[in-house]
Length: 278
Image (cartoon, rainbow, N blue to C red; front, side, top):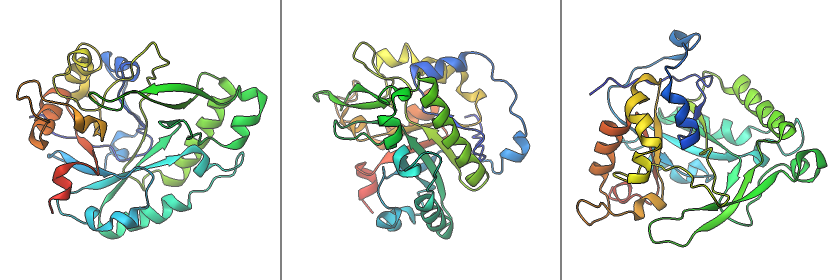
């Protein structure tokens, strides 16, 4: 098995892997500046992080404190971090980073600009109302799981140049505040279904459509990346292993993630059965 590598600097911004973003990995990556400074620890084992969405970390302190959990991934939506133009509020991140540090655990931030419920429109009001941002959001569809009806929500119109500048300003502010202090920062998947394209997956073993698309790049090029972090979300848990006819087990997720996708970190939904056994 290839050694695990993990870059801790926020400058190694990790995009959630999609057919769009993973395709860029088909070429040999450019050298990363200051890699020695950015990489502070080498891990030889697959790491397990809990994914708590936008919940308060203090509500899950006991789970995070477990010896088999390395850290936590928390969602912070754009509106929460920038309530008014150029006014940044990182108090929740600071509070939860302090708790993670106290427990000797790692914090991974997911900066959210897309949402999976019709009523969730969590962009700053100025983005939603000022004409130059074109309304800020467009509708998207979402796969809620195997055999489930499609859901719907919203995604930020990142193709609008004015909106994109504001989003990049938020990323810059996060970098200036937390570079070297958090374990990593990722964006949600960059592919959307609107409704002619299917968003790319989390970890769903043996899914033929994904093995022909996003997964093949992770299998062939993932070992060239500083880190590969993927999720097992609640919808993922609904899928059936075609080889056994049963829901995927923890061991099956882990074996496929490491051997096929070169995964270093798995972000586990709180609904994952093995998290509830202790």
